[in-house]
Amino acid sequence: MNAATTEMRTKAIDTIRALSMDAVQTANSGHPGTPMALAPVAYQVFNHAMDYDPAHPHWPGRDRFILSCGHASMLLYSTLHLAGVKAVDKSGQPTDRLAITLDDIKKFRQIGSVCAGHPEFAEAAGIETTTGPLGQGIANSVGFAIAQAWLAARYNTTEHKLFGYNTYALCSDGDIMEGISSEAASIAGHLGLSHLCWIYDDNKITIEGDTDLAFSEDVGTKFRGLGWNVLHVDDANDTQKLARALDAFKACVDKPTLIIVKSIIGWGAPNKQNTHHAHGAPLGWDECALAKENYGMPKDEKFYIAEGVYEHFADHVGARGAEAHARWQSVWESYRATHSGKAAELEAMFAGQLPAGWDRDIPVFPASDKGDATRNSGGKVLNAIAKNTPFMIGGSADLAPSTKTTLEFQGAGSFLPNNYGGRNLHFGIREHAMGAIINGLSLSGLRAYGATFFVFTDYMRGAMRLSSIMHQPVIYVLTHDSIGVGEDGPTHQPVEHLTACRAIPGLRVYRPGDANEVSE
Ligand SMILES: Cc1ncc(C[n+]2csc(CCOP(=O)(O)OP(=O)(O)O)c2C)c(N)n1
Image (cartoon, rainbow, N blue to C red):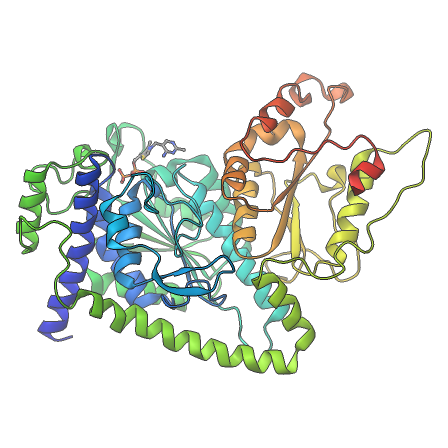
């Protein structure tokens, strides 16, 4: 790499930093320190690792990037802006407009800007999922990776590698501490999801201070124990080391990868870096100016983008992505010509539609005095719909025999480490991760469902709330909705759960009273 390229790379990275701190300072609220620290990581992943076409942000074969530490939202917004990611219209087609304009960044956290405090799915193309509640994004990423593995198993052919994409998730100490991430990492390791890469920002700082206050686990050893490929980068500013780690991720074919990156929060801000004061409050214009001086940028300019920075992104993520997309497009054209039936299924999926005839076998149940448990009719209806909706998958948190949610028709099968084509997912006893994973499946285009006893919605409410906020058509099948659950006793009696679910904004709660109400 020559000196001019290195200089431009540094400028590009520092521009992410400066835009982020200026936006936070202008809003007078937000989180400047982590975008400043992780700018090289976002730069490297987008420009040199991902196949992502900014001109077609909904291209189905794209690599995905999730910012799980959503409070660092300016990192994502700055990067998507500089990468020139295009806005999409209602049908997901790219337009000529930018998804995130400089004006949006200047109005960070203000009403009317797509740059909300935390990234909100569908506000701007390039935001693959809503994040903010720590742990959810990385757990979503497991759903993304399961979707990729499933789509590859079901639709790829020897000549047509339609689905080989990678999912990158950037996460913080808080993400890793949350219980949901252990559930999600455990199942990802068990399944050997090798297209999944978590990048953990090991900066040792959280809101209350140093992580020594509450966190002393050996994350690398833990993840190795969970079956992950664990890599280390000892300096977030060393893009060569980041590049090598990202290459090692791509070379690993049997495990998910965790890259543990040491960073300094608020890097470059002389009085605040490496302290929790850089986490969640504006630095102050004086400190911003000092940081810019350190970066070699004009210290009094705000929202400054040096000449050549946009072009640098266009020459890297833009050019790489356009090439990868063009290659994919020709594979897709050939697939459509030779596998028209399967291609039609995928087209419906890409368009967010249900296939024609999805409801044609929904049963009508004869009237009966005795009636039947709605979980039984629920299982029949679910099977009838799934049979005619080829891209519908789901499962239960180890309760399928009770929730009656096993897909039993021919060819359904189980999704297992050695069989990624199965349609029955076995989440294990991990309700919270199940909720986040089905969100990830849904965001990947699949129709997804998850099942457990109604009382255990307590264990996955965080994910259910996000399904609702993101308007994802996931289905939660919640059985044993009765205080009459018998000898299981009070721990298994859903008492307040109906009210609690109905209180989640936008969550549609149906409580069928008999078999035919299930069908309806
Ligand atoms: C589930 C959840 N609990 C609490 C918070 C509030 N919160 C935001 S950031 C943060 C911790 C910050 O530490 P870290 O994750 O290491 O991020 P960094 O300081 O490196 O930016 C907390 C507790 C949250 N966003 N989500």
